[in-house]
Image 1 (cartoon, helix red, strand yellow):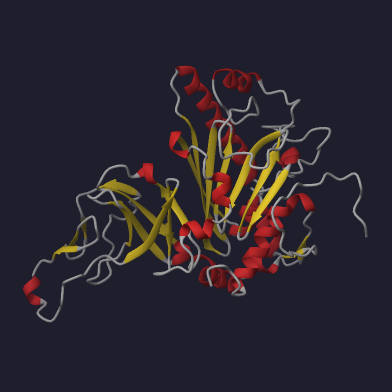
Image 2: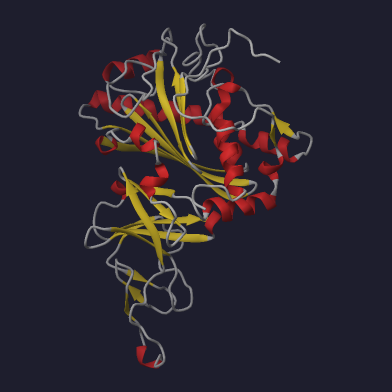
Length: 405
């Protein structure tokens, strides 16, 4: 069967691995056995984003991340020497956590185990043991909170479950560093955070966010025709770049798009997510596409950095089980210097919130249908190149062929 000649061709300047063209099997999206392989072969080996440096600006500031996929709770803390470190939230005495239950962030001079009051400093070193004289056979020298491998790129904090990962963070990010490296992330302020616990497999969740084919239908009440034009009615990406295991897709914009009065007013005074004038920033639109709106950058396995003109946002998709995912979105905009620009930021927050409600409305229905067993495979089109690439990489890693083996 030959492809129709009138279809739009996606510009892909990078090498494309042999990913096949057949439908994608559903079983890996619903199989508990496959999920356990993903836990061991992917999440215990890949570099995983856990935050940004601005979240812990001062010595003693810390974050606590509960990562069910690793069966771990991680502390990320800035030490007195300004260095950021990560530790397992485990007292070496008898395993109690050293942060308060439910704590997500805070400021401290050290960490106190709430069981027997053992104390650790900001560098993780054990500094105080009540009744130390009753442990005559214990060598306390060098005891500390169990460390976690950590590195930082462009202000983004990553951890790795391996003590000595095969690739450094910079090596792991590969060509994507070239595309995003000059984007001025440090000039942006955090303006909003959204979270959800959703009964859906993490891969199904991700698949909904790196293609624009769904926009015309799912987002018809928020951004209709924003990226669907008469020349490109299916929102085919203007370009894609594959840097296995990562990828990047550029979303088209409809140049004839007419924003709502509120969106038009927001764009008049400051950048908003609604399509408008493009602000010239380095590190976006790496393929130099015309009719460009924004770039979807997917850092394998579960982290997105979507960059646009005057804003960027991130997604973290954290698997809880084969049937549940914890999702978090963080939105950033260039620093507002006027009240009008603040209003534009509020418009971005509200518009993205409403768009996300529409996206989330499809998740649990899709997963429920997959679990019925009646659908054996999913049909994936050329404009869904990111969906196929993500699935291909998951399979490669589960089969022991990932770049971190």
